[in-house]
Length: 147
Image 1 (spheres, rainbow, N blue to C red):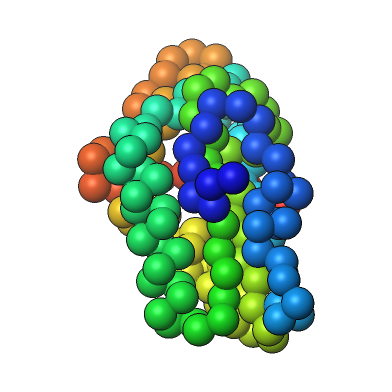
Image 2 (image 1 turned 90 degrees about the vertical axis):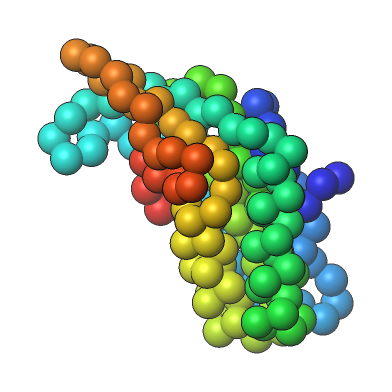
């Protein structure tokens, strides 16, 4: 199993969770980003994600390395889905585990922000009355809500 991956199938939260568990970890923080229906008063019908997969997975792994350096003992796994996603589908899963909860919380938030900054994943928002690609080669924008 890959700890950092971009896939076209639905994301299995438990798979990423299990990759971060061992006898030393006392805390697990799981973030899931879901496709939301309404953004700033505009109704989204669905989203389409594309990625430069080899580079995206490399950058996800880099985020994991950065977290390990910053918070020793933290284990990270990240999965991002591409393709057509419907309302409420999971677009991203980020799981961080650590011996104590504070590091797990901080590392998870860091992973979300770094993903938005450096991972080459783009989305097209499809609305009732149009569509638009969001993001460029340097920045990822998310249309997901925390659950």
